[in-house]
View 1 (cartoon, rainbow, N blue to C red):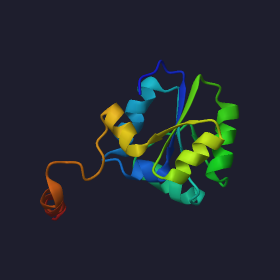
View 2 (tube, rainbow, N blue to C red):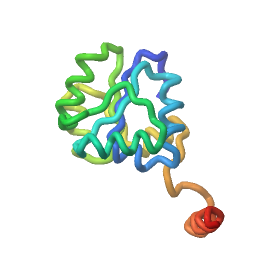
View 3 (cartoon, rainbow, N blue to C red):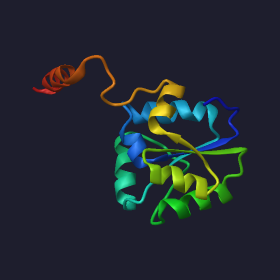
View 4 (tube, rainbow, N blue to C red):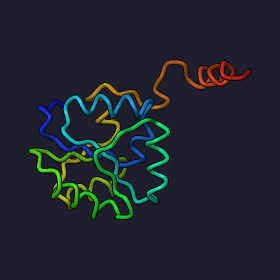
Length: 137
């Protein structure tokens, strides 16, 4: 996933939720993408809550529209050489093809960009439990 900034990159919300640190993924994606945003079929407040909680500043989001309509609208609004959709399901892949977007599965995208998926750490479940205990008063 290398580019010159002439790319629009859309993440399906569920793909971002699979990342270890969504904020870092977004920041990294901005280095080689002109526009970065989130699309989802979930209600707007769900996407907004997730992006605020994770300090993500997006250039676009699906709002009350479905993913298909959102991808179509973003493609019309943001004129870049490439439009890439990072998703998690076969339905996401089919949707990307219907809307003339390139599709990357979240695992492929993470590997190509060297992003860490949640649960990929070497600590395993025990490390997570220790982290939680460290947060206790």
